[in-house]
Amino acid sequence: MKSPGRNRGSCCIFGERDTQIPLELVHKIEAAARDNPKVEVCLHPGAMHGFFNPARAERHHPKPRAGPVSRTLDVLREVLGTPAAP
Image 1 (tube, helix red, strand yellow):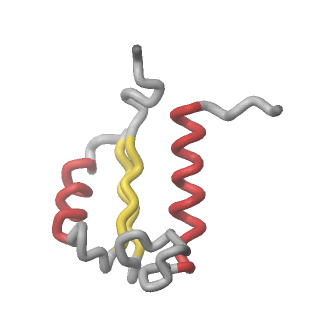
Image 2 (spheres, one colour):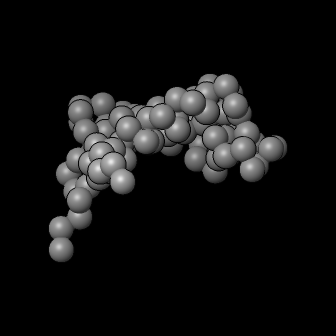
């Protein structure tokens, strides 16, 4: 069985103040992906790990939330296709 998203690309979303995925690692990922148009790296200033999850008030960073959520939905639509209307 083929994966529907295979070879379609990746969107990596990071928070600048993430202690679980250090900024140094994010920069390495950016450098490795620089020449690959199928990989997008998004870094959100001042945000921590899990920053777009409103259930984690201590980490929630509402300002950049719309961007990552919107971009995530765009990627899912690209990979899975737009769902048919009910």
